[in-house]
Image (cartoon, rainbow, N blue to C red; front, side, top):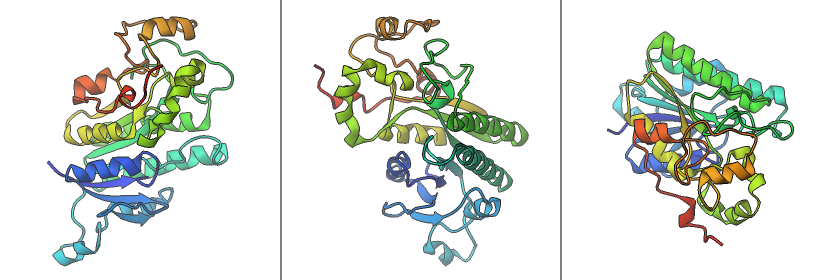
Length: 298
């Protein structure tokens, strides 16, 4: 079933691939961002989501000029996908990163709930697992990294994502809306697979990403699956691809390159250390873009 979707942050690295994927599935999309997205059939509304009034307005406007022809005002919105954020540390001061990410997420979820929108998908992050932007060489608590992990980031970005998950949970409990938080892995665009030979040659360089990633196009599939699945309330999903960014099986690789981290559940074959079993089992995710399709192994 096609839906009318407000997508925040669609001009960013992930959004500029996810929105075309959703359009190809027949969904109608309005992009909310601070810069325009070049995507046929998708209007961008320039919006500062840290201002509550702008967030409410952006979630309740016409998607384009054609909306005025109905004479009935803006049509209802079926879902909000919230990707807008300061996308990492060291781009803006830490306090600004934290404030922008948490306040904008609060404003978007509050506006959606009060406007009667019953499906909200937010971008959380692999950084919640605490190693990506850690000070020094920090070990993960245990592998595989599942959605039940005790997240403990040190940095302003990862911390903002933990707060956003709690905000989403609070509004879901309060309203009964479905709010799904995607812990998105290191996003890889189609042109970036030329980086993988260097990843394979230097395994320690990928520890901070837990030797995992998500193809931006497969992220589009995950968002589409979330849109289609109703009735789950608040959920956290790891949004990563199936396999480890390494040649060979995962458990012996981790024994060599992450000896300080216990493996507490069976990891089959070359499964990624960040587990995507939940999106496979609950949502029916089927990876389409394994890195091995694009990278010749040595």
